[in-house]
Length: 94
Image (cartoon, rainbow, N blue to C red; front, side, top):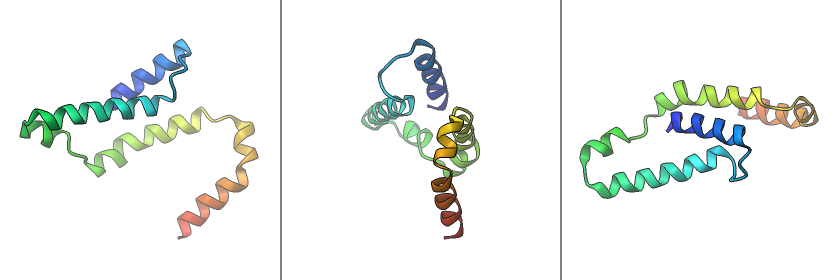
């Protein structure tokens, strides 16, 4: 799914599709694939598609956060700087 997200993101950006954000499209594709896997009745597929939080937090989340920060517009960042500090620092302290 992560590879699908990267490929779909670059295709949407390159061809300027207006079908929504690539994350939303990948979520829909993931829901369809999960439904197909659950209706297939094979236990191997259920085991393979189980969610591993360590894999997500160590390998999937950092590139997503990096891409979001890399593509952020400076003007929008500094317009919302106070909100970012409040939510970032307050949620870290809490």
